Amino acid sequence: AQSVTQPDIHITVSEGASLELRCNYSYGATPYLFWYVQSPGQGLQLLLKYFSGDTQVQGIKGFEAEFKRSQSSFNLRKPSVHWSDAAEYFCAVGSGGSYIPTFGRGTSLIVHP
Amino acid sequence: GAGVSQSPSNKVTEKGKDVELRCDPISGHTALYWYRQSLGQGLEFLIYFQGNSAPDKSGLPSDRFSAERTGGSVSTLTIQRTQQEDSAVYLCASSLYTGTDTQYFGPGTRLTVL
Image (cartoon, each protein chain N blue to C red):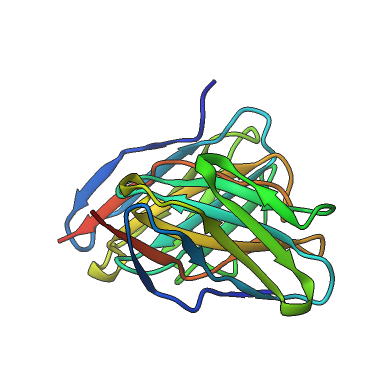
């Protein structure tokens, strides 16, 4: 069975600082990995995804992530955080063996001015 | 282009009443998912449709919960005899294919059971 762990429940950063949100997955084969963002009162929006190929993935809003098979990780990064990035971030893993992606519990990002 | 829509956006009901939540997926998407998000919690999977069939109902928390999908499009989640613990945001998502494909989420229905 596939699983996803987001070890940080809350992350607080200052505006302009760099950001890294952690995501670890468990799955035997090559996973399909996603990062979604949920702004207050909104549904989830896809930031980026990894299916195969280049392990560095670029997404929307200046976000990027790197798939590291050896560490079973897919951490989300942004070089400079904006106040509008304050939101809930969800990592998810899918696979050809399961119809249902598995979501992590989410990391809440707080941005200080 | 239309995204996933859900109605109503907010629903307040009294304990014991039945409620129906509606989801209109993106046209042509074969897979449809229902999730529940309680305050401060992650996404709890409820049920998944492939076309009009629901191969996996394992996430439905009790027999008070049911869902259907008609014409491979609109889906309705019904909660009978609502309880206060049913209060949550109910999210619907659709994807072109299953498991490996990007899910597109609706804005959710916030259900409050008094």
